[in-house]
Length: 74
Image (cartoon, rainbow, N blue to C red; front, side, top):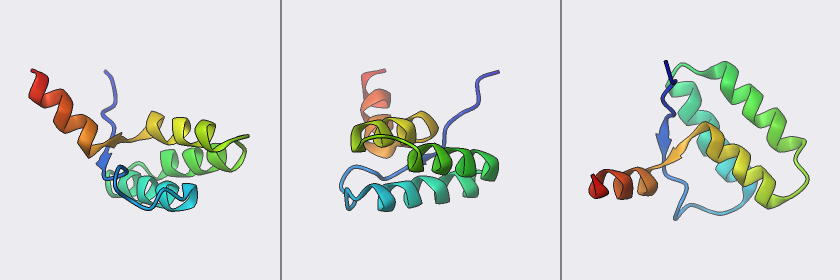
C-alpha cells in the first residue's frame, strides 16, 4: 500500500527553505506522520543546496496547486 502524502500550500508561500520546511513539517504532523516530519527535517538540514532541499520536501508532501492540476486532468 502506498502511503498518501499530505497536501499543503508551498507555491505562493515565502520561498525561504526554512519556511517551506516548517509548512511541510506541520502538514506531516497533522497527518499523524511526526516521524516523517523529523526524517524530512534532518534530510533538509543535511542537503547541499536549495534545489536539493526543495526536492526532499516534495518527496514528503504534495503542493495543493499540483494536486489541483492533477485532478483537473483526470
